[in-house]
Length: 158
Image (cartoon, rainbow, N blue to C red; front, side, top):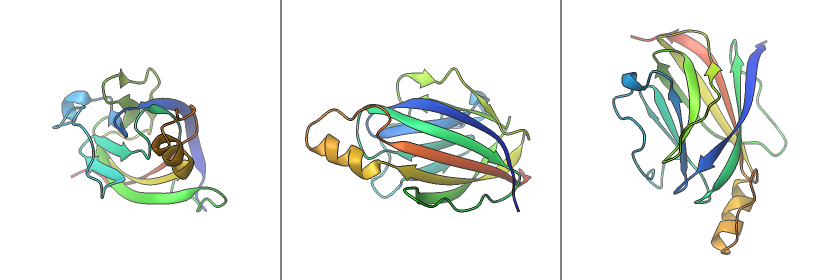
């Protein structure tokens, strides 16, 4: 059974329904932030050293919990919805959340292995509530939408 090795709780500003996660080795990202709105079909879009996430509301602050596991974590139940599972190559293995125009979070999360490919399971809560409030013309209260990003190492990068 896999074990949780580390975690970090942070918040990110969602702008134009998007936020990102980037390796702190920004020079290793061939398409540095910002790039704009994600295609409608994509909830998660992976690029080298970067993952973009589409939110269900345009402008608000979302809570994000990042977890590092030594293998595939157990499935989350309850109100958590699994949105996607992807692989991302990271050059430094240290990541931070990014807002479209606001830049990176002052907090970083060390995954531990540079030049590795990590599996990332993305789950969320509150997406429907945030979308409803947004489309009714209301302000989305901070923390309405929550994201869980679970990482585990897969293999060295090519």
